[in-house]
Length: 100
Image (cartoon, rainbow, N blue to C red):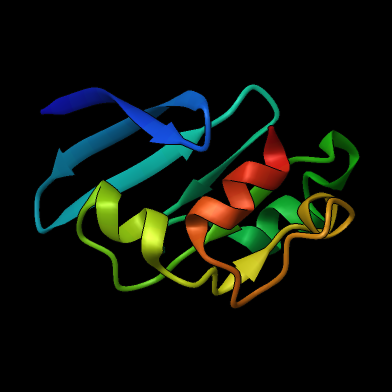
């Protein structure tokens, strides 16, 4: 099952997506410039094989809900995200604010 819901961050309404799969749930919250996602995100792939795309993204591990994704510290970030000041340890909501 796929669920989309509005997520308030600062004064912006973003899109939260939850995809329920067997034995796991994929979570993401996106802005028009980038996104944060659960541990399924392969930041290494984005930085290496897809580097030319300059994808702005960050990953949190161990999260099970969109609310947890917002609060969790980012475990890893893409190089493009780093250029916006998004760093590991930053909360999901703070990372999203920098993507606006």
